[in-house]
Image 1 (cartoon, helix red, strand yellow):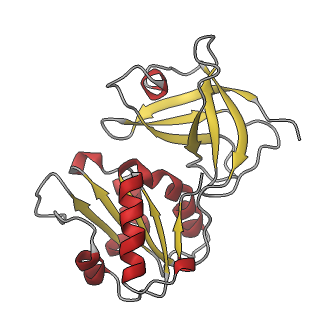
Image 2 (tube, rainbow, N blue to C red; image 1 turned 90 degrees about the horizontal axis):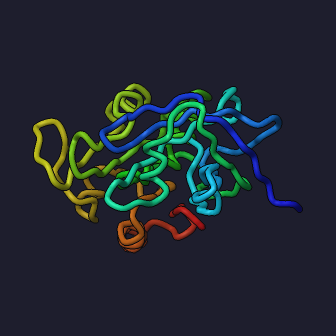
Length: 225
């Protein structure tokens, strides 16, 4: 099968936190994906066309436009730094759609920082279809200002949206690492699904911890590249 490539215009771009930018893009005719899937994106400029990077769709397939929520790293002149400078009217290249995290059933979603992005479309879909009642989200960030889509997740999940901050103490949120002791406090049932996404070291450590807590290996769902 021939590789897909679509040129799409940026319709809107705004920062949703101090370093995370939401892009609204044109949607190619017949373009389809499942919540949790991703594509490779490059910038349609001569010096950047071949610099592809994987990003997860944060919209739902039935939306009339595409959306990506992307952390911008300005500490080196890479693709996200360049994405941070783009404006409506600029063009991106989208490639094949592929799977990352697939929803298998209710459970606990655990995300570190920008690792939340594969869960955004999944949680939006579950909320829209009234299937979110038996799931919760544990979200670890460095500081309060790093929490992506805080208001939306609060509206969707209420008290089942649990935040912990690793580099800031506040009265509102925990200041804890997500380890075995923390999970035992926050999770009643270790026979449910656990969806984990974040920095590689965090995901590896969490998988080991969950298995040690008795979670069946087939109930641990992690991002697959």
